[in-house]
Image 1: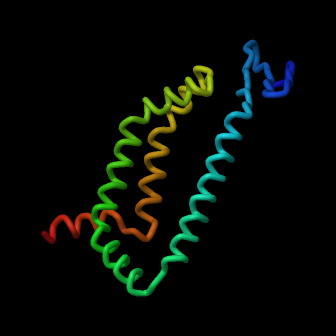
Image 2: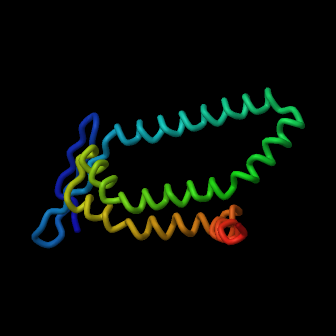
Image 3: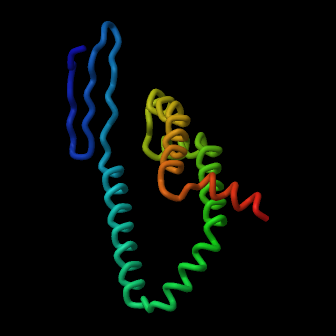
Length: 147
């Protein structure tokens, strides 16, 4: 594979490479994606810091003990919420991919690659959910059958 040409402008870079008799286009890097990512990261960091400041300014021992008891009682509902979110995320995955692909102007092969990642993402979400200390499925089944 050899590089045929490379066009660089202020917002994007595109390189074409030949592989035999066909030309393969590499994806265009758009600054919008980077701004979106870093903007979301900054918003998350700001929200985390503000939440931490609010909790530190309101942390009396009786309130925190009461809050811990309420969180223990709400654990099964939080688990059901996480399961519902995962189901919606996996169930509507083609819709999300189409919306993002249209917004980022994906090539057809990029769209197909994103569609093919559905079950990889599902396996990763289930792996993270099972390995993190929430013990989600076991807690939910225990709660379900104790009542």
